[in-house]
Length: 241
Image (cartoon, rainbow, N blue to C red):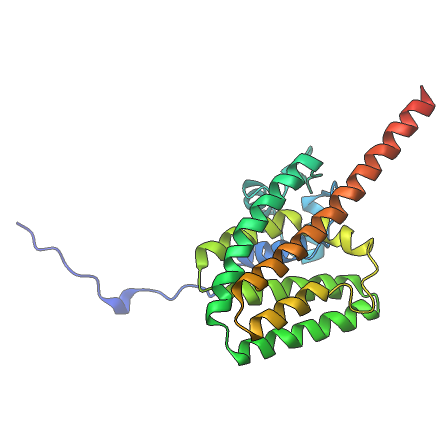
C-alpha cells in the first residue's frame, strides 16, 4: 500500500486578508443597516460599480448575497431593489426583534462591567449630540452602535447573527422613522439612558423592558407612517375615480 504523504504546512500559501468582493459586500451591508438606501430604491449594478470604483463582478456577487439574505430583492435589468415592507411584515419583525434582542440584552446585563457601561455611555453621549444637532445619519449610526455593543456583551454569536439579519432588513425603515421624529432634548436616546441606568444596577428585567420599549417606539413610528401613506393613496384614488 502506497504511503500517503503528509502536507507540509510550509507549502500552504497565505490567503488575502479580505477580497474585494468581501469589502464591497461589507460596505453595502453597512450602508443598508444605517439606512443610506431608501425603501423601494433601485440599485443599479453599473452605478454602484462606478461609486465603488470597481468592476461589476464584485457588486453583482454582493447583490446576490444580499438578495439571499432578503435585504434586497431582484429587479429588472440585473438591478436590485430595497424592499418596501408592509404593515404585516413590520409587525412580524417587531415580534422577532422583541424576543431575540430582549434575550441578548438580558444576557448582556449578567456580564456587563462598569467599564462596559462607561463605554456604552460614551455612545449615548454622541447620540445625544447628534440628536440635538438633528444629524439624522449620525444619530442612526450611534443608535446601531449602541445596540450592537450591548448585544455583543451577551457572548452569543448566534443571537448576534440573527439580530444583524433583522437590522439589515430594517435599516432603511429605521432611517425614515428617525427623519420623522424630533429626537432633541434627549427624546431620541431616552430608552438608551434607561438601559444604562438598569445596567448599572445589573437589573436584567429592567434592561430588557427598556429594550422592548425602544423597539416598540420605532415600530409604532414606522407603522403609523406606513398607515398614513396608505390612507393618502386611498384618498387620492377616490378623488381620481
